[in-house]
Image 1 (spheres, rainbow, N blue to C red):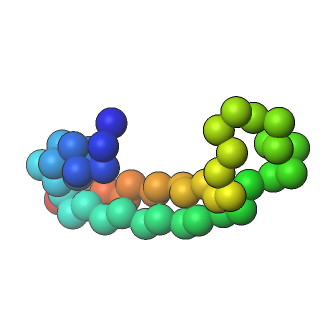
Image 2: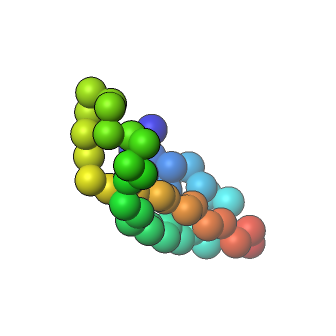
Length: 49
């Protein structure tokens, strides 16, 4: 589900904010087919009104 869809839904219930953090991938993931050098974590924050 795209972030903008989550934002539209959650904004109906209060103040919405999004925090993103980028992490490096683990060496154990080197045998995967899709090799990316990082992973992005999304934290959706809702302060109910």
